[in-house]
Length: 128
Image (cartoon, rainbow, N blue to C red; front, side, top):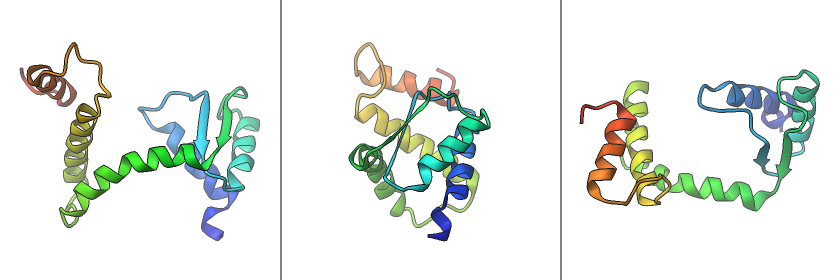
């Protein structure tokens, strides 16, 4: 479709890789859209991404990431929309942090409530 062509894919990858919290990945996993390999090759020619970076097109691996977002989408949907970007940022950050704790995706000495509280305080710059 017109919205999923290689130019749009290239813009998406540039924007995603420009993000402050993203390092240069070794592998990018995407679905089977034919526009992605074209966009990645163009970015490699422009030296926007390293030549050694691999594009992995596998639907089921990408679905794992999408499934992880499902929990957060379910929590946000009940809030009936967020009124400002600042509100959305703070609420989503909190929901994602709690989701990470629940899934034990963070390295804590143990999963005690005290350690979880310290993680949240450190994450959001709160006084201990």
